[in-house]
Image (cartoon, rainbow, N blue to C red; front, side, top):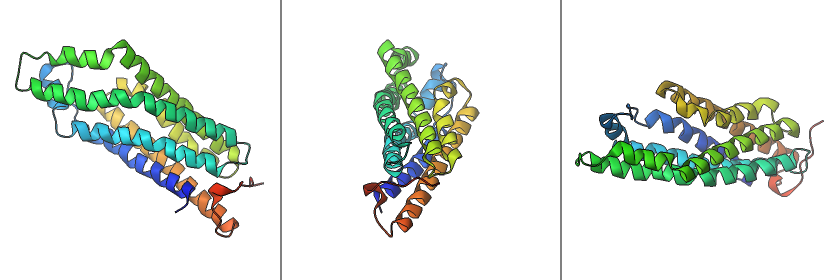
Length: 229
């Protein structure tokens, strides 16, 4: 498997993980003590958030493959910018997700047996601290910008279907707003993002196959790609 196909596989894996994240996340009224305990202490709380964390890590790897696939075209620099921006974004959101996944789960598990623990107040401190909110929002915005740049690179490359990056970009543009929507909408957003990632993965995989066939088996990541006319 060459590097471009490996990148396509990472995008496909990220697609599955971003669908599973909201689908498996426990949904209860977290504005109440009982609901917060039920959600945050559930056995699926940590795995569902870890799925998202792994997805955030895999996306830049896929965009690196995109940059390799379109190197030598007019979209090359845009794709590199997409990779760099998304990598920065993933790095900024991961600490917040770690606190959400592991910190809140530990606090909620303890609060379930110790009513003196103010779970709601502690959860607010974890989620809404100024630095936490700033880095999380900046990370999601960077991921949205990176995904948009990737969609632009796909459109301009003349190598991949022009629309194959659009749902992927839309999914990340909506990542921050979807946190303020009901559970059903958030699950639907996961499906949208997963579909966008899967389409981009399929386009990248097919593009790698076509390029390899054109180069008689040469690794497309090691040579310039001539744009289609």
